[in-house]
Image 1 (cartoon, helix red, strand yellow):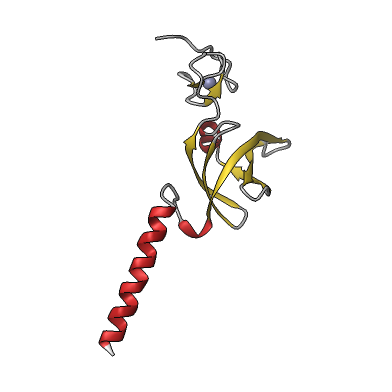
Image 2 (cartoon, rainbow, N blue to C red):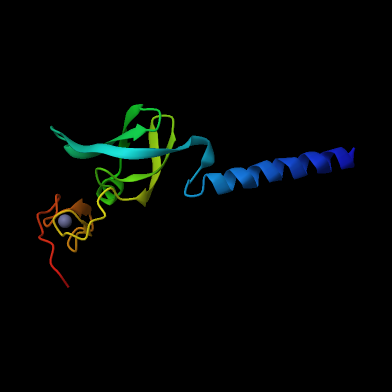
Length: 137
Ligand SMILES: [Zn+2]
């Protein structure tokens, strides 16, 4: 009986480790898939409890698109055109890990910069979020 259990456990861990290698970069393998950030938007609610919510639309390899709600920090971290591994649970955003940037040119007008003021990632010479200009060090 113990021997059977041992074989099952060995098979289980072998499958688990091969999946782990394949989906490296995923926070949680079950709900992780490769995706492109298509577009981002913020929504401001009015009224007594005015608040801003952050959303991004991801496109998956099968062509499906899905808009998920993010935190402000996550929103600043991703840029339109980013390609990465998206982890989600149902309709909830869990994590996005960038694996490549669409804009890799050294031209400052096309390059990805990290804002020195707000920390956001943006393409071009001026931060999309706080209008702080990019400067060469
Ligand atoms: Zn900024």
